[in-house]
Length: 317
Image (cartoon, rainbow, N blue to C red):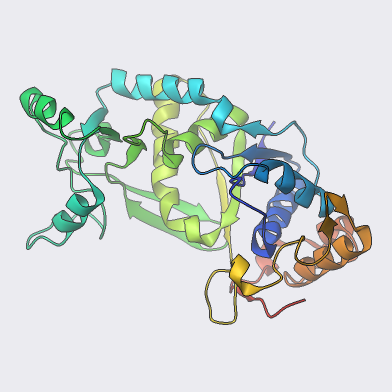
């Protein structure tokens, strides 16, 4: 069965912007008769106790899931298999560039006009084995995908890939040779999220619109890996929802005052104040033009085409 998902990173308490996106992910999935999954994206920075706290915060919002949460840290075997498959087809190469190297290449007098600003220029793509052996003594290698080779000789450069977002319409971007495993051995988000979504049957991705620009490369990789692995191809529905900003127009953060359920007195020592939780949830739903009485009432009134397209400026509850 097709599913939607919410996928927080356990780096700290969820703030109101995170919770608003979680509510939207739940509403999108339920309104389209999809299962709702929870995935803990814990490959990178993790704060002790944050996962358990986030589960309580989501519970306070009344959100339910159709399967137990999964953790990316338990799924590295799947990422190993995906990487091996790409490597088997000659689509992986070692990269020794630092961020400084990439920035300097981008500011060179004659950058590759086919690549967007900040894209990887392919510096390490065609190193000889002798050159790679030398570089290995200087710096651990990250692994990148050879997008041009994956696209085939006719492309010559990285492919241009387009997705259609429910709120933003068509979005296209040139796919560069992005990192799939960092030089510390950690799998990159762009690989892990694609593998997870394919294995979990996730065909609806709802998340903040700050991630919109990375979506074409992820969708491109999903289609490539599906073709190579024989897994059913994705027909993913994307909805990148507006963020919550502070009064200065910046992304909401802890420094903006009472922006978490703990700050607002909803959760105290893991105990949930149900009345306050309902009040906060009502305010979040109302900011989306939905009735705040209950999740059921919001679901009945939910219409993606009527959702606000602009960020919600948070001025307190």
